[in-house]
Length: 254
Image 1: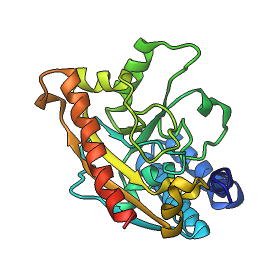
Image 2: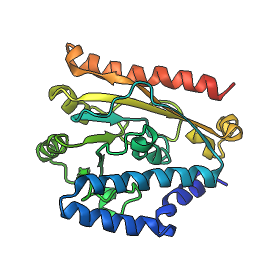
Image 3: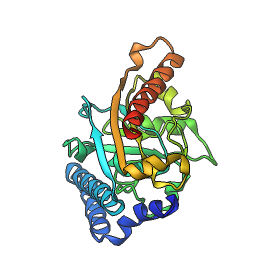
C-alpha cells in the first residue's frame, strides 16, 4: 500500500463515521448560540477520535512528548513540519493529547480549504474562525488583520515550510507569517513529528515502515522579545525544530 492509500484512509474517516457530521452540525449551532466552550469541546473530541481511528486502522503507535507545553496563553502560533498531510490529526488532537480539552485552536490555510464544505480537520472553518489566505489573490494587509483578530481568542497552527515536503528532513521556513510573529511579538510553540514517511513505499524509509512508530514532540517556545532581529528569531525556530528532529530520528532508526 502506498502513501496515497493512507492519505485516502485518513481523510475518509470523517466521511464514513456518522459522529463527525452530527458533531459538527451541533458544534456549529452552539457556536451561533454563543456557547463557544461547548462548541470547541466537540471539535476537540472529534479531532482526537480522528487521530485514534487513523492510528488503529494503520497499525501505528504514537509516542507523544508534550514536554512543558503550556497552552493556556492566547496570542501564539503552533508550528510543525509538514511531511505529507498525515500529521494534521496530530496537531488538531493536541487539546486531548495534553488533557487540556478546552484549548481553542484555529488554523491557517490556503485556497484548498475553500473547496471543502467540511474540511477534514474536524473543524469547519467558520466554527474555529480559520484564517484563509489566497495564493491567487493575495492581500497581505487583510491577512495580517485577520490573524491578529483570531489570536485574541485562539492559538493558530500552521506549517512554516509552507507546503508538503514528502521527506523527513526539515525544509527552509517561509518568512511571511513568521514576520508577523516577530513584528507583533507572537510566541512560537514549536512541534515536530517523525515517522510519517513510513507510510510511503520509498526504500529510503523502509526502516520507518517496519518500525510503525510515530514520534510527536513539543520542542519549546521561541519568544520574539528575546531576539534582536528577525533573522535570529527565524534561525532559532528553525534550529530548534531541526535539533529535536535529529533526536527523534536517532530513536526511530535504532
